[in-house]
Length: 65
Image 1 (cartoon, rainbow, N blue to C red):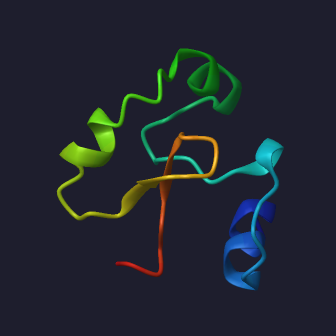
Image 2: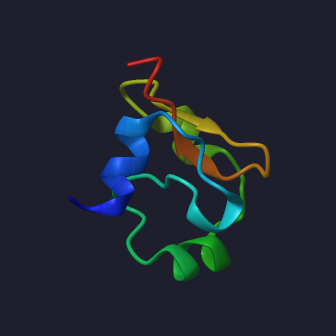
């Protein structure tokens, strides 16, 4: 099983180095360097699944969906 999925299903919160990112984010390091934390993707999310995490990066909040 993919360790990211195991973390998700296990209910444990990821550390900052292992945060959940939007599905379109691609490479985590590149995404975190490019993201300006402006919130445009959070506002544009049609399902309302994205919310800023504690650091301001968009993060899927599965409890809301």
